[in-house]
Length: 286
Ligand code: AMP
Ligand code: FE
Ligand code: FE
Ligand code: ZN
Image (cartoon, rainbow, N blue to C red; front, side, top):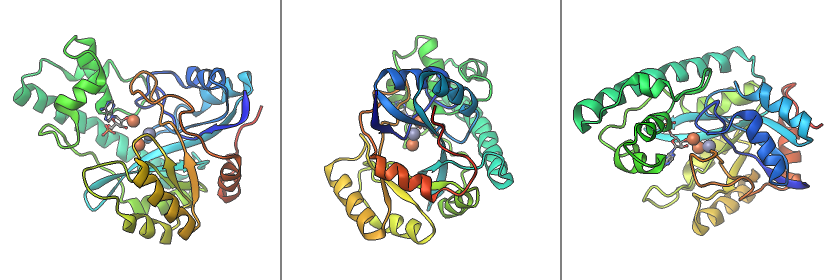
């Protein structure tokens, strides 16, 4: 194990990853990481079992979350490190988002049945969502895989589930600036995730500048969805706006190709995250 290998963005079965939080932490330790962050979409329900596993296998655990937010009609993912999980405003916002995700999946399934002719039911989708997990499009994909319609998630996304698909339905998501303020209020360090992932347009620095004026702590630079141009711009912005720089895998188990530790964050940057967090949620070190 190398204490210097730090991966700050992963997903478990508490959202749309395929490994339980404990298995994920054990896999991270076996992969030689010294620190891993669990950042499930819109939930902290994986924290407790991840913490138990981290103590057992001697890897440091950063408890985090990835909030789905929106800015001018576009989805923006915001990582929050070390929030107070009992913060009433945060708890209420997570409940609202997860509730809306439920009804949105129902609408998508209805459309997929009626308009795409897919023989899929909400019961089949729900069977793919573990108790307490944040439901998402990957669970529709998993139901289609289980039914033998497609061989893997990726094909379900390409054919029916991608953002510009006619069957795509939005869920409620907080405004990104409100979400930055909320995370800070909950003592967390907000870090914008894969903000320059290719959407067919040029990477736009204006959003990052706006976020930085509103309390953003850092920017995810090293991520497989960032090409060299995106990384260069992100690094320049981090320097000019004094933002923390992270690199991470965005691991989803077998749900995506991303591998643990494929990008990493330096110990200096993790120190800055810890120094910037104000809640009583600390990095767990065995
Ligand atoms: P949702 O939050 O329900 O809108 O679903 C978005 C999630 O789908 C993202 O967090 C990704 O993990 C996952 N996703 C997006 N595109 C793909 C893909 N092509 N293959 C597998 N998973 C994907
Ligand atoms: Fe995901
Ligand atoms: Fe994300
Ligand atoms: Zn993610």
